[in-house]
Image 1: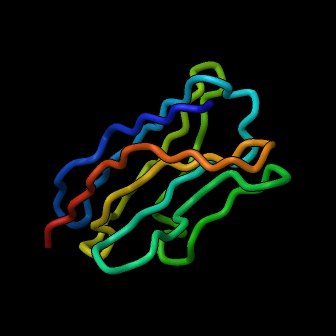
Image 2 (image 1 turned 180 degrees about the vertical axis):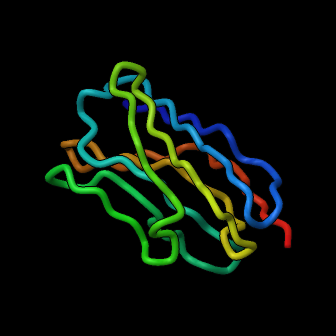
Image 3 (image 1 turned 135 degrees about the horizontal axis):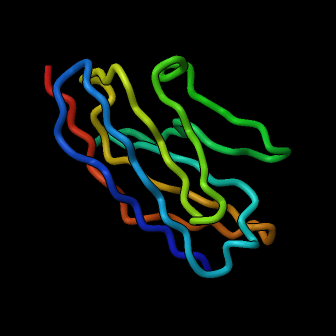
Length: 116
């Protein structure tokens, strides 16, 4: 079992910054991939940034150059630094992990709202 707890969402003006945190606990040794998704009403969840198989880092095109994913293995925490935020970045952001047994885990989500 893996538990994921997000924090750091909030309301920010366009051009501002936020840092999201995802603290993992439980069987963290079994995590293979971990990253951040986001979802807006009526749309599917979208992978925004993540550490994917083989150790690569993925970013969706719309956030490249603005968002940075990082991790602190000692704290079992993954971060998403979001700079130059745009109103279209408004969404609920979810931390997601896949274990070596191909089991998905999701956090509860944190709201990010960017005002114009």
